Length: 74
Image (tube, rainbow, N blue to C red; front, side, top):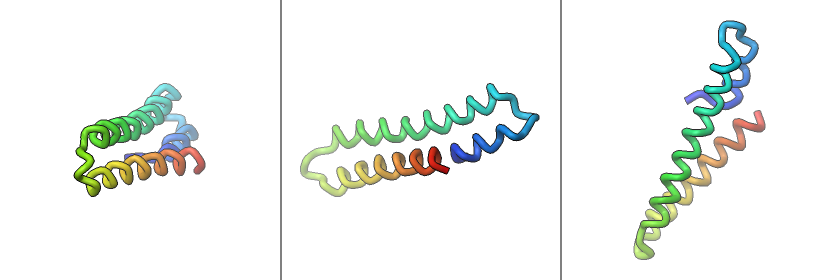
């Protein structure tokens, strides 16, 4: 998966249209949000008796948010 900053760096490439560049950025964000949404769903539906799974989903959400933050700040 390309980073958001890589997608922005492609703007200097005249062979790639701005529409394509924007689509790449949106695809990156959409993919990250889909992972977060799925993890939220699984977190909501895991039983209280399974703290390991709950923590796994919480960690995945934190990880995806960090990817987005780092990509935006690069």
